[in-house]
Structure formats: structure tokens, C-alpha cells
Figure 1 (cartoon, one colour):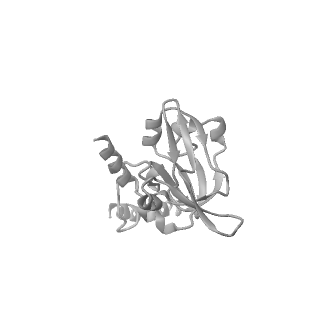
Figure 2 (spheres, helix red, strand yellow):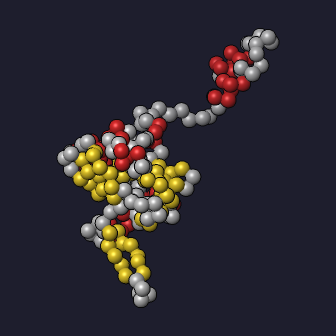
Figure 3 (cartoon, rainbow, N blue to C red):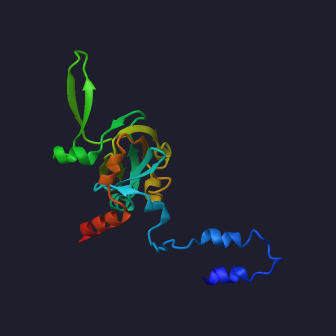
Length: 194
């Protein structure tokens, strides 16, 4: 209300475009929120294996969380899939197969369908450990971060920006509902440290 009263008191010589800006920025009834989560991670969804995905225009960018890169230590090698590789959501298959195995369907020459078991879509190696990478969603790899071949340390330095791993199509958008938002992931990580 004070803003409106102040705007009414402006002289006629006041530039007409200027009062419009405060009115556009302030909307009656708009909720005001305070967040301590960085804007960059606010739209991310996380898995229990510490992968994250950010969706933009039907394409998901996948990486590992800050918690995961800290646990790994200095990353020295990134083994990533090839463009075109089909990925299945890890969590769905993990619940069916207790060994965290993702099913891939391949057809042999005789026309029979065989199920082959593949464990992960890639791996990260550090000076103190190695970790497999699991897909947070079902889809096809459309791009890999080629910068990681020369500079795998980007996974440590900028895990939510330049340290992303792959980009993929999202075949089943409803799978996003099974992933954790930032608040749920923070709570999950806190439970691991207890």
C-alpha cells in the first residue's frame, strides 16, 4: 500500500515508464518466500545413488551431487556411454532385481528376445574410489560432456554446472515424480551421516 501511495504523489514531470517497473515487480497477493537453496539446484531432482537430473525442454542433463563428488574425492577418469545408448531408470529395475541390474533388450539373429544384464551406464574413478553411474530416468543419451575427457576434475569443481555427465531424452516424464527434490535429498543425505 505504501508503494501505491508513493507512486500517486509523484509529480507529473516524473518519467512515465519508471513507475510501471515497481508495479510490475510487485503484484498484490503474490507469495513472498525466502529460500536458502541456490537457484541452480532448486530445479534438480535426485536419486538415492546421488545422481541428479535437470529437465529443460524434454532433455534431461544428468550429473552427480556435491555429496557424491566429495565422497569420491578428486575424479581422475569419467567413463561415459555413447550417444544413442538406451537407458532405463535405475530405481524401477532396482526394486525388481536386488542386484541393481538394469535390463536391456537385445535381439539375436534367430529372432528370439534375450535379456542381457548391464550394471550401469558409466563410471567415475577418483584417487581413492570408483563409482558406477545409474540413470535417473528412462531415455536415450543425446550428448556426453566431452570436456570431462581432458578435465575430469570439473565433476569436483562444478558438479552442478560444467561437471555434468550426459544429456538424455526423457521417455517417461512421470518417472520424475519418483525422484527427490532438493529438500528431500538434503534430508536423505543427513540421514546417511547420522
